[in-house]
Length: 512
Ligand SMILES: Nc1ncnc2c1ncn2[C@@H]1O[C@H](COP(=O)(O)OP(=O)(O)OP(=O)(O)O)[C@@H](O)[C@H]1O
Image: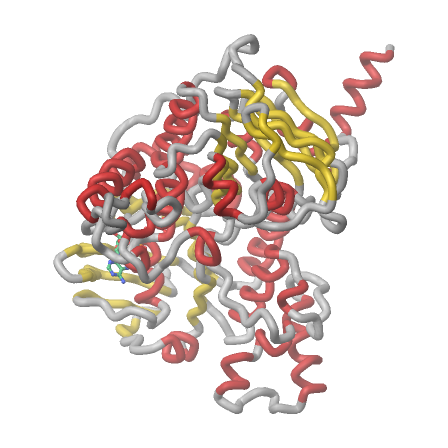
């Protein structure tokens, strides 16, 4: 007998104005399975999750829980049905404690157990301990992103959750943090929780999930057991064609041009010390390291977003005196923030205005008026180059899917024709195809003499894309790897300071 699925979606459709985000899709989640949902940016994955979580209402179609048709008019209705969604972006109250966040809904509705803080802490700690030993009296702002993510999951678990939906949970995690999350997710599965898992990373889908469903352009394409498919097959179903080359060709070693960016003994007096980096024209330099190692702080200090206490930055042979970020942009140095919502894009502004926000002078006519036509044509060209899926360049950024918002943030950096671009996690949340396009675009820019620095926690990206990788550990440069030396183990070893068994073995062989 076939078991009734815990969650079933039949013929679901949703339009935003004239644009159909989902068209007659189906989906089935079995009890105790981890089911991956894949599709390009804008394929409709988050829209489906939001409907199941009561955040959005479908135009048509049915949602069944345990074989019963249900209506989910609000997030609290979803909670009552045992459905929890952990969003792409962390949405915790940063100033509140872990315990207060875990019981936020109950506190707001005065159901907290029950405003007795001692009991609240004890109950919250019990849930938190299922995942990781994080003290629940800690302020959320003092936790790492990965621990914040676990607090989001703990919050979901208090709701007597039967169906847990995780939307790109590893996007902001390092490799080892992601591994810890997988162990936790597998443990939840053992406890009978059914999990929907959205991710753009094929490797993790294939190591974690039982089945995979693919959406393309708001349509259902297929559902397969993981054992009966392959990453290539999933990508082919997502895109409708084969992707042959994942990474563009690298520079030949003798190719890099003149010294473009020269950072010498830079310190900020707190997070990093004595950092020296050199970048040549035409080169893509990777920066690896664990989250919290100080990579973003180094980049932000180079670009005038944080103050330095000592050291120098020279661009094209000229020592820079950068007091703030706009000085850096004027000099030809731009920074793509890893925090898209915080400082990458203005969500409530149109796409065109976002793309031109960094340098309006370029688009301003003799009378000091903004040339809207020039703004629109620049935005259209860049959005097309990056393949932004949108209704039009006048649409606000908030109407775009997560990955497409990231593409707008990248277009914004490119609009100023920079000499050096420092990108912090540039392809976070970006689908496989768009990632290939962005990598190709970066290589093309490098080919024109632009210097590019890519901070990434995704080892395959550092290895596949970069000509050289510098690894930062605890605020200092731990070492540098040339293209020939690049490998996951070599990066991990420098990043953690711990030798992995096979490196030790190799070294022992070399000595022998
Ligand atoms: N509030 C909204 N207003 C207008 N259009 C929207 C809105 N929300 C989503 N869309 C559109 O619906 C489509 C599906 O978006 P959705 O966020 O579901 O994609 P996704 O598959 O989750 O993408 P990603 O991988 O980038 O997160 C996109 O074209 C998006 O622009």
